[in-house]
Every structure is written in structure tokens, then in C-alpha cells.
Length: 94
Image (cartoon, rainbow, N blue to C red; front, top):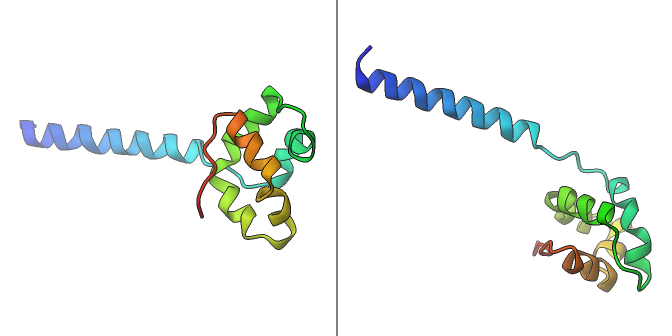
């Protein structure tokens, strides 16, 4: 096997590995996953560590939640933005 073929094989193997990592990290969008944040969103209490973990995990889903008429009032609320900020998770612009 020459150098070009070996390099190509290594690149393909790395791409396959990275693709598997991305699939493993895919998030299932489920607003129920944000239930640990309910108290912090609807009151002045600080978000828990569990809430912050879920906000970070579900961040890719927030735009989808904002488009849902049932969830909009919670996701677009000042409380939700406060929780995201407290958790160090930038609130998406959709």
C-alpha cells in the first residue's frame, strides 16, 4: 500500500469514528427532560445541577420547543432565559 492509499484509509477510518461519536451524542428532543428546571423557570429559585445538565443536553432542541405553541410561553419566558444564563448555556436565536 502506498502512502496516498494509507493516508486515505486513515482519513476514512477517522471519519467513520467521528460519525459514530456524533450519532452517539445525538439528543432526543423531549421537553419532559427539562422538568428539573420547572421550579427555577417559574420562580426566583436558582437552577439545580440536574437542571443545568438538562438545559445543556437539550439546547439543540430549544428552537424546536420555541416553535411549539404549547411550550412557547415557558421557553421564551424571562425565567427560562435566566436559567439558561445561570447555567452558562447561551440561549439560541432561532
